[in-house]
Length: 301
Ligand SMILES: Nc1ncnc2c1ncn2[C@@H]1O[C@H](COP(=O)(O)OP(=O)(O)O)[C@@H](O)[C@H]1O
Ligand SMILES: [Mg+2]
Image (cartoon, rainbow, N blue to C red; front, top):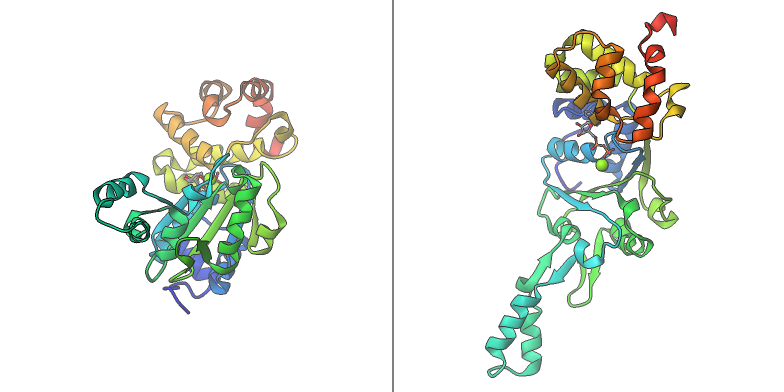
C-alpha cells in the first residue's frame, strides 16, 4: 500500500484524531478508516458547523500529509481547480523570441511546465509520497458542470490536460469532499465516494470539545453550555429556529461567557450573548420567550 497509513484500526484512528483535538464518533471514524483502506474519496454531508472541514484538517495532521484545499463557490471554473497558463509570462516569452524562433517551436516553448500555474487538484495529484490530503470543500456551492469535471479525478485519481495528456496521481490523495447540502449532488459523484452524514454532536461529545478548547470555562460552565445548546437543537425547541448553532458557536459562546465572568447561565447573560449563537434576527427574537424553559433544570424538563 502506498502512503504512510499510520493508523491500523478504527480505535487507533479515533485516538489519533483526539490527540490533534478532533473528537470523532465511531461511525464517522469507520467511514474515514474505510476511505483510507479502500483508497476511495469520502463525501461528508451535514449542516454547517458539524465538523466536516475540521476533519480534513485533523486527518492531514494525523497522517502527516499536507492539506491541499479547494474551496468551491458558485461560478467556479476548471482553471481555478486544476491549472491555468501564466499568460503574462507566456506573452513575455513570445515577445522576446518572436524574431528568433519558428512558430511551432515558439508554441512548444510557451506551453512548458514552467508557465503552468498549478491549482489545488493538480497540486494534490503531483504531491510526492506520502501524498496529500485533498479537501474539496462545500462542493454543493459549485455547479453541475464542475461536478461532472470531478468525475475522472474521483474515479481514477487522474485528470486530462489537453496540452500534456493524462496526469495520474503519484500517490492517490486522501480525498474529502464536503457538502452543506444546499442542493443534491450528482449521483455519479456520490457513486464514486464513500458517504457519511454528519449530525451535530450529542451533549457528551460537545462537552468534551468545549472542555478541550475552552479549559478556562471550568466543568460547571462547560456542562451548562453543552446542555443548553443540545436542548436548542432538539425538540421541541429546534423548530422555533431557522438554523441550529454549530460546534464553533458553542466554543465561542463558552469563551464569551468566560470573558464575562459567568459562573451560572441566566436569562440575562444568554440574551446579552445571543448574537454568538444565532445570526438571524428572527432566531434571536424567537429565543427570548423560550429562555425559561431552556434554562430549567434537567429533571423539570
Ligand atoms: N469533532 C470535533 N472535534 C473538535 N472540534 C470540532 C469538531 N467538529 C467541529 N469542531 C470545531 O467546530 C468548528 C467548526 O467546524 P467546521 O469543520 O468548520 O464545520 P463544517 O465544515 O461542518 O461547517 C471547527 O473549527 C472546530 O473548532
Ligand atoms: Mg466547512
